[in-house]
Image: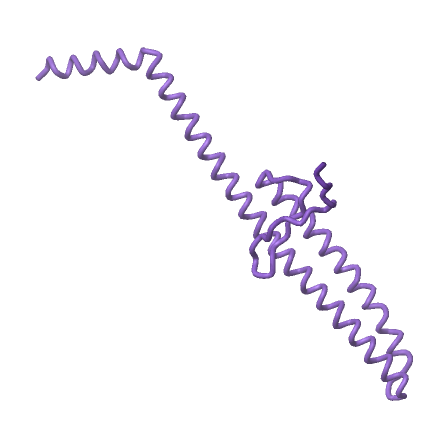
Length: 151
């Protein structure tokens, strides 16, 4: 029994000192590093996608708020024309409308920034603008610039 253990120990020591064992360890470490990098990329891409979904929802809310503000302003204008509302009420309505427009512009810019982060995380073509569809899925890309006809 002792002889078998001594032989195994010698083979184990010989393998450890050989370059094959070192190469196998390096290869394994490289594979582990690649897998960790892949997992990190997936997490960043998922986070960027969900951030983009939130930004899309914020843009939708800002668009609805602007639409409601326009409707209210229109109603006040008709009420002033009919004589049942004061002109001051109509004038006060114009300030929030500008704020709603600015809010929509900021939300749209934030969405574009987050879309660019998603494109970067997925290593997609930066010339293509991505945005979530109505149900959260990414539709086919819509190019920013028109395609040139092929000769």
